[in-house]
Amino acid sequence: MTVEPARPSLLWARARKPERPSTEQRREHMLLTASLTTGVARVTSGILKSTRLVDEILGIDHVDWETTLMVGDVEFHRSKSGPYPDHQMRISVRPSAEYAALNYMDNRDSEMTIANSFNPKRPVPDVNLIFNGTTGAVFPRTAAIRISDARAALIEWLDTRKRPTCIEWRPYDSY
Image (cartoon, rainbow, N blue to C red; front, side, top):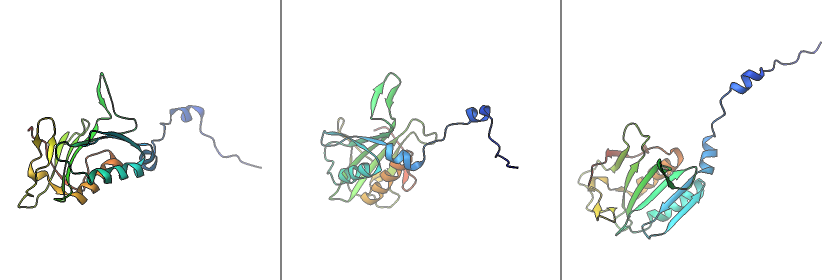
């Protein structure tokens, strides 16, 4: 006598929630939209190309304008309900000084929707990093972190789409 394995009922099969994409699938299908300090917009697909773009950005001297990055499953666009994706990172880099500053924004972050990178070391670096090229505002000097730390934070952000935990953050103060 052969016994067949029990099969789930059709009702159970229909009630199952669809599986979430794996982290690896999310990494390969993610899109990074960049508005570079040079005035050029770029879009990359997948973690490898996006990491290369991050490395390129970290080598650019941001004198007059910041770079803005948006990460998501689609290319950045605006709609009636606002910008999408709304995972945004603003970056300013001075390669000659070996410092960068980050500004994180995500309306879905329940702890800190807008935050600046924070360097707890004193004295603070003597470097001005542009926050907003339109207004000429600069990041507070406490936001200046080593470029290697900024890179680690950006790669973590691409991977998780959340505020990176590998660096410290402080709530954003209006400039």
